[in-house]
Image 1: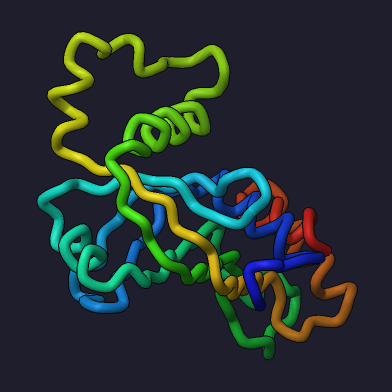
Image 2 (image 1 turned 45 degrees about the vertical axis):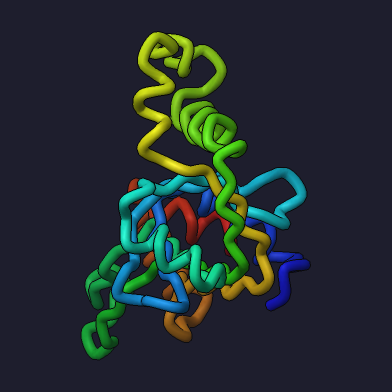
Length: 189
């Protein structure tokens, strides 16, 4: 799927990233330097905004080769044959995930915007904000660098069923209704 992802992909990938912004950032030049960091999908769904520790191996790897994959895992859960109501049915795991690939542009000028975007996503409009640490912001910010990743490819995978008949899928969705993966099953259909 290209960066112009549509239909189930665009809205649900945006929902996934908003719910679970912490992702693995895997530099293509040095996959072993992968790091967990939060990112925000920017308006228009064409780029991700985030920050990295300056001393992280991932940051150094991205200076040499800016291409990276961003791996998101959202709601997930085990599906038992008991959920399906069929004894000879095989258990499985339902999940929502996405892999976004793109070029990372490290930019100290984006650092504050990146931190504020993640805080705003997590705290909401009336929560904590960066002004509370303004007196030490420069000291903390000197250890990180903002980035923007231009999305080139999106590969969502929403495995919310396993070839079930509609009535079996309905039983599973009902059994998992109070879980996050059950909410996804009900929201995507």
